[in-house]
Length: 184
Image 1 (tube, helix red, strand yellow):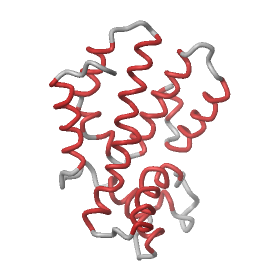
Image 2 (cartoon, rainbow, N blue to C red):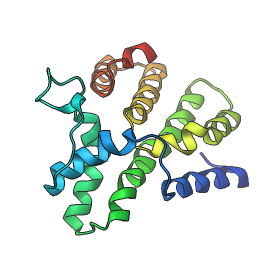
Image 3 (cartoon, one colour):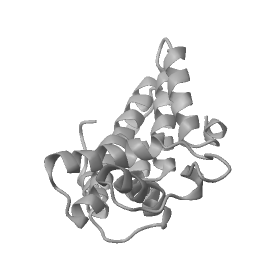
Image 4 (cartoon, one colour):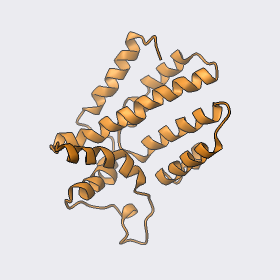
């Protein structure tokens, strides 16, 4: 991914800036991810939405995506002793920026190379999209789902494809969102 232009660097910095912004896209960004993990990791009272509660008719969503997107960074905050409100607010965003958002750039670049496509324009469209600038660093199930789709496409176009990896990633995708197979 050499030869980044000034505009590419600007878009990457803009993505980083959005991670540290105080706004939010949808209440689920907190109530169906960070609040659940904060309650579990820090032992504080938190509201568990019905989708994740054993007290309702049964679980309708897996906790695995929440654990991956928020549990890991919040547990890391607890281990290193950094538990200010702002740190806990941005830690999952930083984690997802590094793991999902930047990985999507790399995977898209690799897909373009495997398909002999010019990656500059494709990466520009990807980097400048609202989805990449904001959503790929937020703790939604769609965020992980995006990474899984990129991984599946990359593995599928690689030679030879690795069916076992496709199966594992598809399983993770289904645990993230039941609608995942519709996107693959």
